[in-house]
Length: 229
Image (cartoon, rainbow, N blue to C red):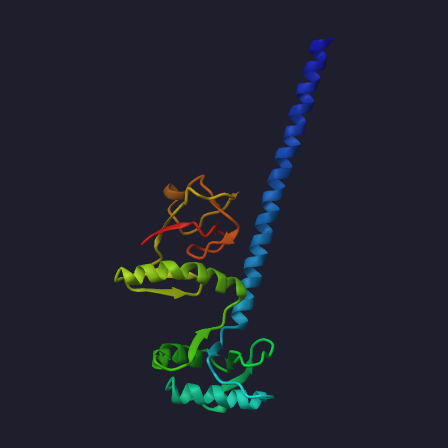
């Protein structure tokens, strides 16, 4: 009698464990689908910003109109960045954020053609020594990824290497750097690895809930992720 009860209990436990494993697999699949959708939304959002630049350091007048803002932006592009454009090349220009006394808000400029943005970014070095600065217009998520990469960018430049940020990736000497796992990670989450040697990352995990900026989308890591540059 006891043996039958034990056998039945073991069978029930086995079935329960099978159900738990199935739910875990379904959860992982759902999380992956959500991550894929988030990546697609992120891509589409940044595509809408593709023709934009952001100009910093432009004095702001009280009750400044959007027409005045556009004229200021166009003037800086022509006279400081040294790119010849006209008002017809600008789809719109406006200040970003809420007005605060004694502070100048950045100006976001959207061009009718992506090529204008590219020309301006290539000539942005002409702003050296001025009060102005110009950057691309990225989503908050991409900006956070780029922020995480800045220390590695500076380290590479100090080492005398050619380095720059391209979208949400760090490029050193014409290619992304090698990445290795940090042993200090505290949060673990299973990931799929794309574009990285399987021998290096097979059955391993990255961590801490921040989307990996140095690798392809879909990977995760924390700020302690190590790079070999």
